[in-house]
Image 1 (tube, rainbow, N blue to C red):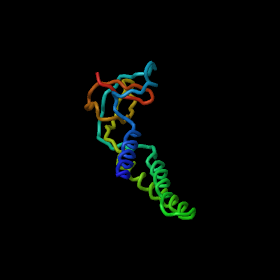
Image 2: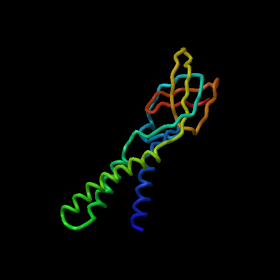
Image 3: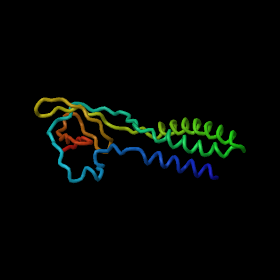
Image 4: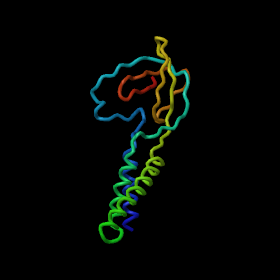
Length: 148
């Protein structure tokens, strides 16, 4: 039972580490900051997979496995070997879990600014813009496309 609760907690923590890539999601650090904006038109759009860049799952899995492995056996040698083996297995399992939970679907847009410059931008699927549609590219961190 305790293993199940720990696994559920671990999975929830990994899911919480996943970044929200949707264009309507703003962090508090973005509020009150001006961003340059340029009118543009969508040239093309395609669906893509977006994978998280962090490896928190590997770290958390290694720590959890090391702690769990340390509890195996009796004596310092058994504890140490259990911790090392548990950390290796936990890190591997955490890495696999992170990979499975960290994929999101997004759209890659190719847009042409009114000055003729062509740019690409990838963002979440909360808003779908169509080829030919007029929009605005907001330059910032992150940059976004918004329709109008």
